[in-house]
Length: 308
Image (cartoon, rainbow, N blue to C red; front, side, top):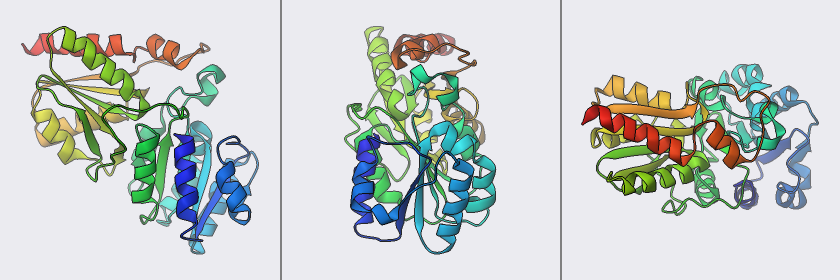
């Protein structure tokens, strides 16, 4: 996803010299296309993410559109106060780019996991929050949002090889894209873990359940109408996210059900405990944290048993 994003950003930058790129001394082997083409518009601020957001705020105030890039916890958590007091408070077009959402940096341990970023970013009124499912959707999302007014957060996956079947690069204005149609269960996912959602739908299909699978790529502004419409058509809805279970997609769906009077039952599949000192491959960690396809299918089937 990183490669598609940087390639697209470089193409857009060729059409608008207001675009700048800042990094906190990382991203190499991914950001070179932009650096090589626009060396005068690239700034490595060093391991100083708070200063990076402060610098970007000043650049945005001066009329530029700065993109600041780092691994999710360093792009979001370390400079959070600076994001709130800078681009958010002054409604400036600073683009925060967090790479490695969820546990993409799985072998680096908890310091590099991004499991609370959606919760804290969508809590900020006026912050647009986008989490594409794969590289093709990241490209379309960037093409459609790079010049929006106000601040924006992109949550990117690290693995450039992931392609979500059925998504085909779509980025809906509603923030929700259906990639499989069904009648019994809605499985709504956020980010590249959509692959696990599709595999869970296959497992449930073998058990006689028909599943709709959707990718929710815009978390703020909340796509409440699209989500409410989908949930009303299914007896059970399931949220799937590589994120803590509170504050992310599952919470958004619960809020939508309560506020829109949507019936049915919701099962939330997310990370419900600290990973601790354990690390391993993404597949291993997804299974350990109970957000792999078998766990998703089990949660969905359990919810269906309660409504039948």
